[in-house]
Image (cartoon, rainbow, N blue to C red; front, top):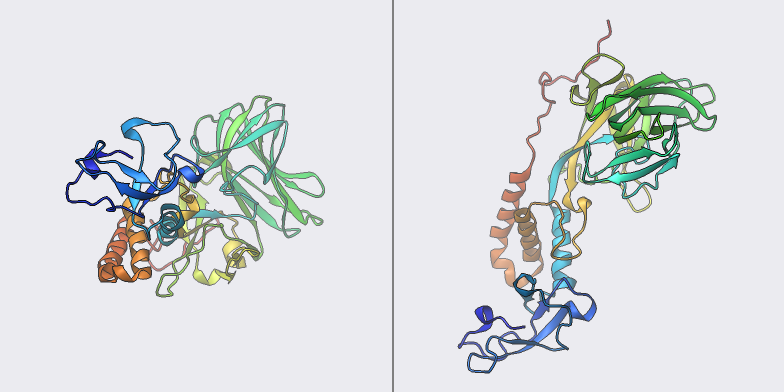
Length: 401
């Protein structure tokens, strides 16, 4: 590694960087991290040349744009530094809002489309184009008339009124949203939209049948070439409900043990059924006495959530607001990966963790802990409780004429 600007110093010895780690994340295997040995001084034939303990790097040279890092012997780039950054992503969080849904992968945050079964259609997760919330939406394109993507079934209560909604952006043809009695293959409710290129809410209401034990939803279109983007499909029936909260919800209390979670109703603002602009809605804070967390998440059990009848009597969609760790958006595998986390915040968190772990850094720990708290406060959203446009101290109520 020749770098005269960095390594050509007459005061350095040949062993100045002996045992340090050289890291090139663009390479693989033994080429990625090498221990350094000797440094050629300014009087040698190749001043500023640092030699590795193994063979020379075999990856093609990319000139000045090539990334290279040099760390001390106890800061191994892939054994310590990268895991440290990922632990920092676990420590960093932001306020985040998502839906509560009994529909498997109803928030479309799953890694792929394995939770959806297509018929006369193709479905892919869209993470770059049209996404209503979170990381992804479901892009469904028909290859035959009446095609679509069907959810996995979920258990429901018989003879109960229900309301289901979904965010939809029709792109070609007519989008159609259907709720079915899964085991009896009966359509319980359906609606459609031809309003192209705008996000809207599609809503259906109905009643489960006496022998309905499981339901499913279908997201598709009428024409053979129909195409639409779908996100945040959810719904409830009028009884106490138990369902899993979003997988990202792991921090619902502060470090002091206080609750850092709240639930909102999202009500149709326009007062009509079938379809309306997704940007027109009311929010209402759900009384904390109307829900509870039953168990903490583990590798085998999701975080279970129980809603009272008072929370589901009107069946409007429910939004949960809580802390979401940045690691939920993706781990760091190389120095060049994108995690969507503010760099200053992640660096501050990594320094704080290292300060607690490494005795030689204890003198800097108070300053680094303060830096992390400051950066964490900087990126926090401005969220109000009660909800915006709601009277302070009161939960929002639905009134019928």
